[in-house]
Amino acid sequence: MTSDSPHIQSVFDRDLERIQALLMRMGGLVEAAMSDAARALDQRDEELAQKVRAADAEVDALEHQINQECARIIALRGPNATDLRTVLSVLKVAGSLERMGDYTKNVAKRVTVLAGMPPVGNAAGTLRRMMRTAELMLKDALDAYIRRDAEMAAHVRLQDEEVDQIYNTLFRAFLTHMMEDPRSITPFMHLHFVAKNIERMGDHATNIAEQVIYLATGELPAEPRPKADTTSLTSADG
Amino acid sequence: MTSDSPHIQSVFDRDLERIQALLMRMGGLVEAAMSDAARALDQRDEELAQKVRAADAEVDALEHQINQECARIIALRGPNATDLRTVLSVLKVAGSLERMGDYTKNVAKRVTVLAGMPPVGNAAGTLRRMMRTAELMLKDALDAYIRRDAEMAAHVRLQDEEVDQIYNTLFRAFLTHMMEDPRSITPFMHLHFVAKNIERMGDHATNIAEQVIYLATGELPAEPRPKADTTSLTSADG
Image 1 (tube, rainbow over the protein chains, first blue to last red):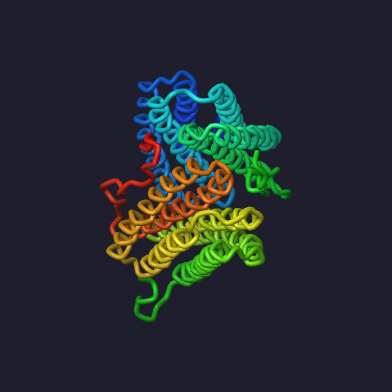
Image 2 (cartoon, each protein chain N blue to C red):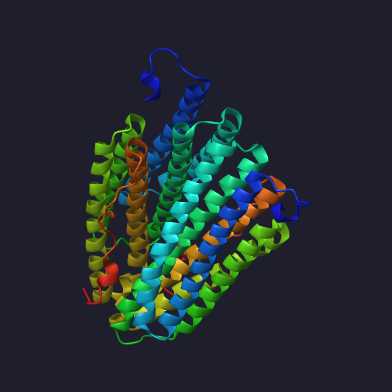
């Protein structure tokens, strides 16, 4: 770990510290946006949703800055294989964070639409819990990244099963509601978009965790990660 | 352009040619899978869908190989800023192709589910046309990439509007069908997944085109690309 090296820091280490700091700021913004989007959904708070949508520009700008910095570091420092692996992992993690930011913005957009419709069902609480789990996964994945803690990262991968589980349950519940009351189809389609977006956020938090495992061990996890959206198995009505 | 440099090729050029060849092979596999998945959907051909699902492993393996090769090239050759930009663009394009492969696999999964249900509506033809457009976008984006042709890449970005348009139309049509016949909700949810996956493939083909513009001009496109999924504006029932 960079900051533990006894007193002598290379120029590369300082560069790396700086881009990792940018990455952590980016992660913090995404975490905050996820939490705000879930609250906006739960409380039908359109103003907060609007704030979440606007905030994504800063996340995108940070990714752009990180990409530039990484390219600069590689070009100027000519890092060795291990250091290069670290820089490339920063690029991957920034890419995952950017997409999590996009999914969060998409959730906020649906809040605005849903605010214009009569409330249906009681999914908002479940969605908020689902988002909370994804948010914790992100937090843990970023902590694991900074500490290069493969064990903690492995735990994040397991948590993704919980998010997938909630998604699959909601998918079935939404279908049932839609069939019972066809007037509720449109709002439930939008709630389903929200659920699917959160499910994808969990996937990207898992991708970050897998980068940690790669950095810490030199190998990507061998066994495929516990899978995922099983709604493609839902052929029955309900 | 590498292959046009008069007779003398650097070691870096040869390396780059090799990874670009891998990238094109990866692109070819994804194109073929997209076409097969659309045909499988249209003809309810479960065996073909199974083939598409199995083929994605090769796409994933190629991305892994490309990642490794790029890291090796950067570490061994210490490319200058321009060459480095090229290598990093290969990583981005490979990432987009990998995700397009995933979306194609997801479409194939839905074919298997839909094959177990009575056919609904007449969307398969439209979905096939939508996939065909996304496939052509990918083909053009990859051609533009090899030629560093920013104009061709700009055209790909415009084509994405067509894909988005088809998606938005289908989304409204699906909602209408579902409301008219609640027994059709489950199959239409799956058809909607298919449409959304194709819409995302268009986005990734556009990402590849944007990498071309970046490589050719040094700048990412200034104006935001013509947007996209407008279903978050669908609050009316229809």
